[in-house]
Image (cartoon, rainbow, N blue to C red; front, side, top):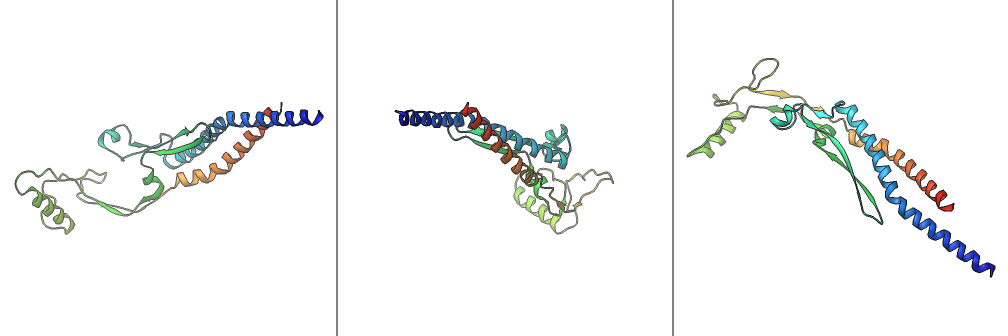
Length: 190
C-alpha cells in the first residue's frame, strides 16, 4: 500500500514538472529573445548612433527622413517546442561588413529611341575609359568641395555590431534561461 502512494506521488510530481515546463517554455523563449534583442540594439546604437539611421543610404524618400533605418525584431515560432527567431531589419550588411574602395559617378539622363542601347553602352565605356565627353548629359555630383564628376570613396571597415552583439548576448541569454528553468522547477515543487 505504501509503495502505491509513493509511485502515485512521484508520477504526479513528474506530470506537474512536465506541465509547468511546457507552460513556461514559451515565456522563457520570449524573455530570452527580448534580452538578446536589447543587447543587439545597444551594439547597434554604439555603431550608428541613437537614431539607428545610416545617413545618405537608401532612396531619395528614405534620405529625406534621415537615411535607412536599422532595427532588430524577434518572433516566437511554435507552441510545443517554441523557438525565438531574431532578425536584422535594414541594410545591416553595410555596417556589418563595410565596403571596399569605390568610385561614385553621376547617373546619366535617360537615352531613348533608336540605337539607345548602343548609346548607353558607349556612354558607360566612355566613363570607364575616361574618354573625352564622357559625362555628356550628366549633372555633376554636389559635394562640400564643389561639383564633382567623380568621387573616390575610401574603404570602410565593418563595425560588426551584429557579431559583437551575439557574442555579448549569448552568455546573458544562457544565464537567464537557466535561472528561469530553476524558477519553474521550484514553482512545480510547491
